[in-house]
Structures are given as C-alpha cells and as structure tokens.
Image 1 (cartoon, rainbow, N blue to C red):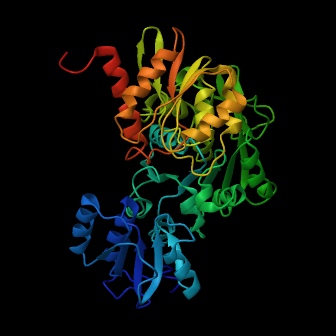
Image 2 (cartoon, helix red, strand yellow; image 1 turned 180 degrees about the vertical axis):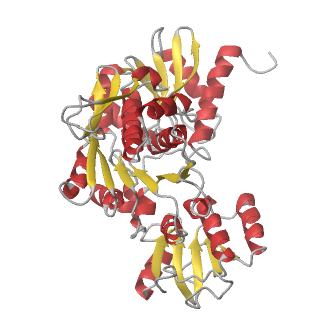
Image 3 (cartoon, rainbow, N blue to C red; image 1 turned 135 degrees about the vertical axis):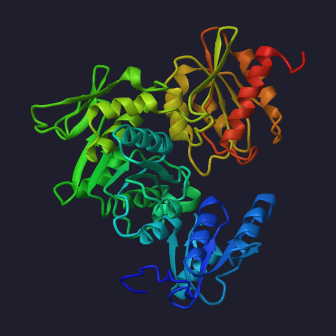
Length: 480
C-alpha cells in the first residue's frame, strides 16, 4: 500500500497492488458493485456467497465476464493469497472475518473502499446513521440539496452503493450508513455527520447495546460538523466528546431551540445554529404542513435533514422546497384505506421496537399488527408505553409469543389474537382478525417491531401483503 493508492489496489490493470487477492464477502448489491469496481481497477477478486439462487447466479455470471471468481457455499476461512477483505455486513464472529483477523488481513467495508477510491476533488459527504429514520432523512436531505441547485445523490445503505457513487461527478453525496458499515470504516471524514437516534437493534450482530452505539458513534470521529438528536440519550452521549473541539456541534430538537440548535417553535422548523447571530437571530425553515406524512418522528426526521442541509449552506427556502419535493417511500406510515370507519396504515418499515414505538405514538386508538424476528430486542418498554392506546393486537411471525407475553404483563386488558403459520397467506387472516377487533375511529396499524425474513423476502413484501389483504376486504376478491 502507498499514499497514492491507500487501498493497495492498482488502477492501471495491474495485479492488485500488493500482489494478492481481494476477497469480497457477499454478493448482494454492494458486494457486486465492489467486485465490479475492483475488477475495473485491475485487482484479482474472489467473491464469497453463502446463499445460492437465481439472482445470485445472474450476478455471478455478470462478474465472471469481468474476470471475477464467485464461490458459493458457506466458507470456512479466507481464500489463500488474500491481501484484503471487503465485507458487506458479515459479523465479526463469522469464520471468514475471524480468520482474516487471525491472519492479520485488513477487513474493510464497501463504504470504506468507496471512501479510499474517491478521486481528487471528489464530492463531500453528508453522512448519517441511526436506528430509525435513516432512509427518510437521507432522501429529504438529497431533495433539499437538489432544491438548492446542487447535483446531489442519496447513496450508501439507501440504494446506490457508495463505491459506485464516488466515481460519478456529483457535487455532494447524502450518505446513509448502517452500524455494520461503520464498524469497518476507519478513515471516513464526512463534511457533516449525524446520529439520529440509538435504540436496541442488531444486538445479535454487535453483542450489546453499548457496542452497537459505539459503532454508530464512529461516524463523528473525523467529521467537520457533528449533528445530534438533543432529544435522545445516546446521540447526546456520542456527541459530547466533540463539544469544544475542532468540529462544529449542532443539536436538533422537537422543543424550542436554544442558540446552536435547530428546533420547533409552535408549528415551524426554526434554525438558531446557522444564522449570522444565533443568540439573537432565528431563520424559519419550514412548517408542519410541509412535512409528509405528518407524525412527531417525521418532524424529527425533517429537522435532522434540515440541520445537515444548513451545515452545507442550503438556504431556508430550499429546505422548504426540498420537503415539498420529497416523496415518502412506500411502507412508511402509508394510509392504505378506510373500511367501515377504520383506518388501515402500513408501517412495515418499523422493523424494530424503537421504530414501532414512534409509529404507535402517532395514533390514539390502535389495533396493532405486530410480530416477526425481534433480533434479540426487548419489547417490554414498547408495550408498556403503547398500552393506553391499544384497543387490540394481532400477532404473527416467529417471535409473536414474546410480544404476547409482554402484552400480558403490561396490557392485560387488551384482547390479543395470534395468527399461526409461516406462509405469506396468513395476512388475510391477520386483517380479518384486526377488523373484528376494531371499531369506527380506530387505526389498524401494521408496525411489526420485528424483521420480516421469517415469512417474507423483505419488509416491503410484508407491507404489500398487508395492503393487498386490506384492499381485498374493501373491494372483495378480484373478479367478483
């Protein structure tokens, strides 16, 4: 490795810089992108993929045309001759990661690879992480940057892999980062970094909440501006060491902002951090009416995006225009239909208790549809807080019994129905049971608090199944 080529990967069709093989762990979207880019720089690349399937085989065939070898099956260690491992989220205890550590082989994320491969004069990064809201915030931020006239792209965990985005002539990148990516990204130095919130999630991967939060906090280490959620304990703890240092530290809050913060005054988003005189001057950025869908946690998302945009010099009018241009992604507090005076809402993206709590807080009388894979997270606090608003609960999926026990402890008067079965067709029965429990004025809310992979390919498929079941109830089966 050299200062000119910190990855050790030559870009002139050479043998991979250090003469070894670059191993890419995972053949998903980011792994395929990393292998493609590495091969284009002349590296010898081997991709490891534990799961076989039609999509993976198609990606392998594409990469084979670039000289990349793909090995299917569960690997026991690092291929011989490896000089670098690029991981797409494999945990540290995976045999390949453990073998690489034992052999002294560097392991980096696809994001770190992208950072190292940036060309001279590359676009700055506005990077963010958090347990929930990341995708919404990064898309809001990209919309605000675009409204200000910048060529901006939302990249990273949100869609376009960073390793591909850095090779294009963008003015600025809005980058969503996961804890998995940050765990193996030691040299990132974003223009602005934000931590939106931290709650128990992926504890099976990280081992503890403290380790998970610590990986989230890595985003601040070399940032020019540190943005933190002043209403959340963990972001405050993670940002505290940077106060008074070289980085600018700015908080956002749902309360009235103090000097140096962005917050809320009545129904307005207000900046008291990036004005000429934050002690005496505030700038109106947008109103609640500009935020879609409106819910308290989505106001916090808008505040986070606005704070990051302002750190990059985006004027107030572009913040408001960006919010107006923002189109919410599917399965995020999406109203499906009203049937018999009951609203049906799809928030399948609420894949952990923290996200489900935010969704439940937006409604006053709820029949809750929940369940899936809890990934080691506890649901007692979620149920305790939501109990006064629950009119019933319908549970499905692998960990439904754990949610049922929490409801028995903290919401004993709430009727609960468990829908057994792991086939995706159970959603019609779920909606039927939810409709039976609901009365006019209630909201049947799909906010699962768990991942979907026990029953569905992803949370989107789960949300679609729910919406289709609701619409069948409204319109009847097709052809009727």
